[in-house]
Image (cartoon, rainbow, N blue to C red; front, side):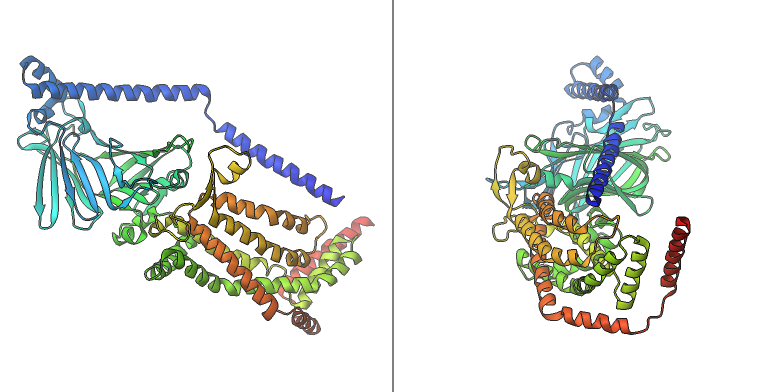
Length: 633
């Protein structure tokens, strides 16, 4: 009867929780009218932008053609003082290229911004051919200043032509791009690329534009990037592709990577458009007073949406002081690698999802240095195995304590069963006598849970560690060709119900091996846990729950890790094998049940001094028992 009662309550609870979640999803879903209105507003903005761009283009074309003075005059009315820039020889679609040994950049005359950024030495994952990692290419990015002029115009720098100049300062390559309103009046972008650096200096300043720029209005900077897919699994890459920003002197936050998101912040010091294992970052020495961020998820169907992952937009106002603008900034185009980002001492390591609090601490100060040391002289696959062995050895005392606790509970099982039978009609008395037995025997029933809780920070830290390890990218081991992505040994195109839901369109061998290993580990430990955990009245039958979990846990392992980095699955496979080995050694050679029983009997014979907490609990239970007896009378 109690089993049916438990099942019924569980079903009701599940239905209620599901109902609440569905209601929350429904209540937060915009109506059809709201969606239609949003589409109209976005379309209107798009058309307005296109109209401005068309006018600007026609104006520049008219001025540069120099055939019609009346047309030129009208065009100057459109571009105002900056019409001067269209009369220069640089008013054409041309580019200036700079390059060091790690980064190659192409800067366009039109707009003056970077239109191609190639990270050298790395390739996209392609089955047939290798393509270099280009964070910016083929108009997937925009960098634009919307300038309010003194004569009530709003001009966009991305539509105007800058005059380029390439020079050198020692070993540094310098490119200045000037949007001119006159021979000595200009808005300047200044790029400085240093040898061997992914980070370049970038400055925005104006000269002689005090009567051109409207001093009462800020210049609106908009940076937009549509991120290209670079990795083998677009779904896995997209999960870690996100917009991260730092604000208010060191705080950091990010937009939800799983859905379309927007946010605002004040005193923003950097914005990162992170593409899992590579990232584009804009930093500033003078924090942006306010900032708006937007991230649109472009992957709805991994079979169709295979080129881009996210569309990022950052809107940042630049302050105009005394009719001038002056900002010192930096650009970073390169790997999302802890050692590289951390060396700049600008909190850029926060861009990597290493976990918050103790989880991030474990990764930064233990796992990253240890793994970095091991992988410095071993192949990465072997390094993961050695790393796993070290972690399991470090956690073996916790495993030992957990097993000893289970063994003690198993030895006490017959006596607990007697108490359950003796006081089966008096739950309160049964609880009192069980607590007395635990106290006399020197057994803590919660001792088995505490070691498991102690392992949780390590478990979660590792779950964050492997997806963040850039060094595993395109490193092979055994059948896996890329330890930063899944290791498919079987793929298919057809949709197979249930199977496709659990695994997608492939089976990863390391994930499958990890699932099998956890099955045998749980099978080995489930029997002892069932015998050591007596069922209490009104409580669910843990034995039956454990039997169900024995089969569900491996499926969940396969579900979660089949598309994850094969390096992570390799870790859990080896970790489970080692844990099984440690448990067998403890069970067969270290912990003997007869010794535990003798120790428990010895503890029973010793007088026990009751702690204040135990005394308080005993008194409360006695009072409850007395109150119950009084109510019966």
